[in-house]
Image (cartoon, rainbow, N blue to C red; front, side, top):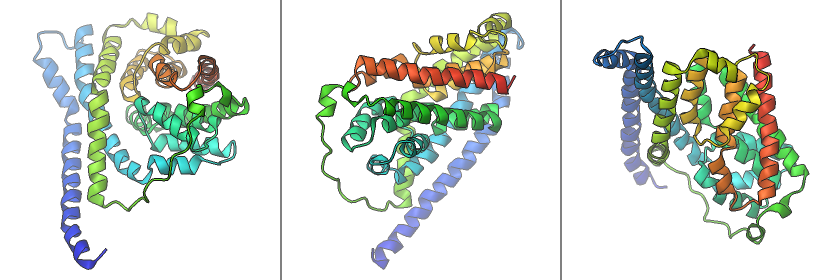
Length: 349
């Protein structure tokens, strides 16, 4: 790159970086006013503030902008980070790795490469065609929706670093161990036949170094794509959380997800599988359930089953996995989630 081109790029970079700085200031100001805004909005309504309905509406009006602001910030930051982790580079890092090491690498990459469920099928095909072992691929597919940066960022903001860090450890453990076990079973023949016939394509053009304006634009594109796709799931999740927060009887919640019910963890997992949400949408429900006295491990097992074993996700994966391979996948991951739920309840009793 010549000196003239570099000189032309410098002002553009300053403009983009300055715009991001201004945006962060506006973000911080909006976030600081969430509580006054929610209280002011509820005060305008003809209802008692501390009634069931008043509590539910206040929860909803506070959590919707809070979660959307947090989601926007996290997705933008990770959209920039993702410019350093292309799918091609991800496949290159995973291909040819030994079992165990590859599973750990795949699970770790699942945190910093938050591919949505719509990307699961083409990524799975890409991993298989690039020679990535099936068990390693499963570690990535488990970790990406369950332990991605959105889930960790929101857990940290809503429940504290202890819960977020413990969830990270257990979530990675489930992804690594479940993927390793699936890999030991040598179930490649249980893939759909057409997947086995795919060969790795020719290598693409050499990657070029992106400028910071391009990386920032990638961050905004990530916000447009991801937030634009999931915002209604977030609102639906917060609405459910608001109803739980305002109306659900504490005795009923204790009987289903309380610390004294041994069957509460498997019941939570069974309830969570038919549901569909992303991490951002389910965490407000988690927050509301915990506020009502539900056991932490039981609630997080519910969250894991919704994000990692949801029925819509299984329907998508059915395009490349046989029904019996999906059954084995659900059984192994479900067992790991049950273990996490019971361990969390023991540690945070």
